[in-house]
Image 1 (tube, rainbow, N blue to C red):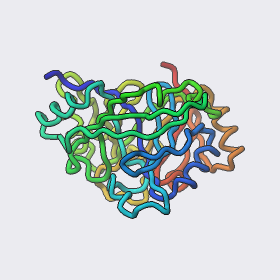
Image 2: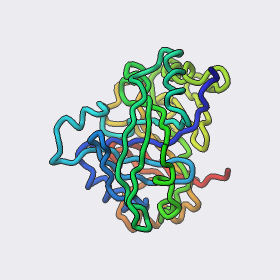
Image 3: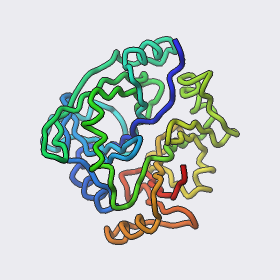
Image 4: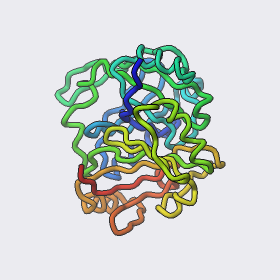
Length: 283
């Protein structure tokens, strides 16, 4: 069986029962969010759809079942890294060969109201990596059975000019050890490059990076408040068409941000325990 191809499908920020607050905050940042979706497995979400990938704000309704939080067992903040696949069954077989498989492929859906008013079911089939591989988050391969119920052109327009997620950053005291699960996942065709403190893997439009706290400090990436030295999904960087558009949205939305010569950032204390960065990128 050939190796899986690394392409990031979406990133997940866990907001627990704070979906209303998360929706308001990210709209103030200039993201266009889809209406609240409700999965057949019990969780709820809002999405910010980009070109190749998207951001999912995942949580549960405050008046829902207390068991809903147990659906993903992850800390508040950036906690989900999701890969694309055209065949969840094949991906599961591959993960079994690499001793990385979690549960068998799981199918689920959520009703969606499209921009033209039509109602559809967005349907998915996913297969997870085993939980022991990622103790502070989760990762899975996602097969979109109805991609047109997600990638609607009208949903891909954002006031802040975001085009795609360009970086997904994991911080760890020992980056070389932290990158081993991804080395096992995508070797030999796709190998993480690095220098001991900064490893990376280009996964479609998104670069997965695993860096040390020292490297994070150099890049003005603050540690999540629950960081304990173990690998922690910590930051997202977005490619944007214009930093001015981002700045205007953040000022208008009364969002506290910091700036360098070529980047705008939001500290994790202001964004559900996740550092958010915006940078102009040329593909």
